[in-house]
Amino acid sequence: MEIATLSSDWPGYYSSFCPRLRHWERGLEILKSDIELAEDLGAKAILVHFAGARGTLEQAKEMLSELAYEGERRDVRVGYESGLWTRYLGTLEDLCRIVDEVGSKYLGVYLHNWWPRSGRPPHEEIELVGDRIVCLHSSEIDLENVDYRLMLTTLKKYYDWYWVFEVELKDAKKNLELWRRLMAEYW
Image (cartoon, rainbow, N blue to C red; front, side, top):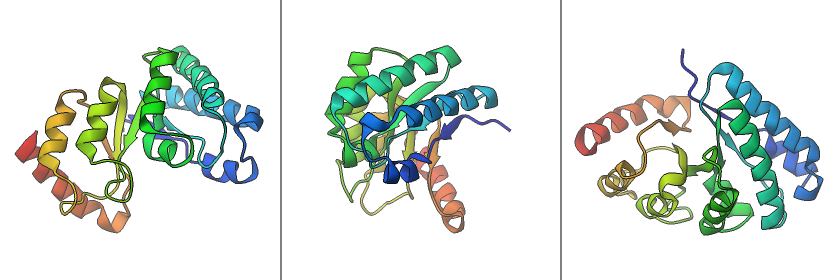
């Protein structure tokens, strides 16, 4: 079985007892270990985040630079989850700027659009992130609020890899059927 991408979700708990990035030395080491695990499993990408931990953009940039270096050593692309970034650390523009400043093809954005709960419509976020997309991550397909024709037309300009869904098992079949329909119609 192929494992294309991993997700480091433990930072949600870690940030509850270590809420400042300046104290994340151990957290950073664990994230590097996760990148090593991704390599061991043959994954080509990994979703990372600092969950609710707060800090400066410079602190986040330094940490992401270290993670990009580890990704390069392991040939694993590191993507920061966009929805969590904008919830706790800054704007999507800030994340894109930091990715550009780090300047590694091993660092990018693991794009998780939360529209209409927050953020922008998916096609706008895809256009902003552009070639920085490491992987596309989303919740349930939402035909009522998302223009998938526009989203997929925009996505095709920058990305042609996996679309990872974070859905409850009871909703997986429904989402798979909707995904197949969308791909047949718009891809």
